[in-house]
Length: 195
Image (cartoon, rainbow, N blue to C red; front, side):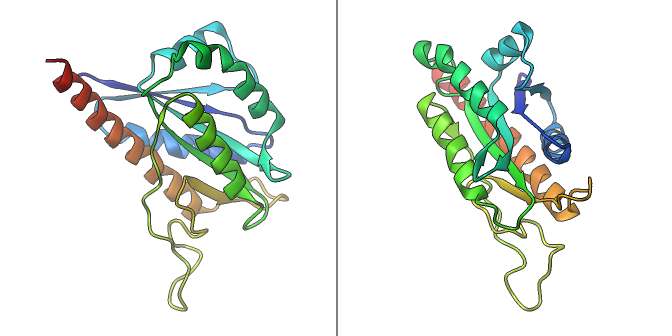
């Protein structure tokens, strides 16, 4: 089977979201034959747009600021309208991740925003599919998906430290693997349907 290409299109204001993007990339690369490219949506080149256009899947990532994606990510989303008009990203797989300083921080709204962006492009959203952790008296903050998101990977990083919680990085790696696995399945289905 041929290799697959995944682009992580993200913005990081203070470095936390960049660490999560690295973990997503590591998870995706753990699936053989997966090529992962990262692009910073705050400074896109023509080559970056070409990578996204050619990709089998795009994983969107942004910090959550004031209950939504960062301004840089919003500007990127608006710039994708040329692709929207031509349906250039239709039927690509998509997923998303976000980070904020608070446990909730209204991250769900950001993940919904990312999923809606993908839906507008006709993309196929890949959920996290990871049961929530840290929801019983015998569990703890070391559990994967400790914040209990389903739509995508949510992370919480304290504003006064550059560190990202290990459990959130593990959750991000899970998301990357899952997207790569389903991208491979999707590609195989498209190839079979064409023959």
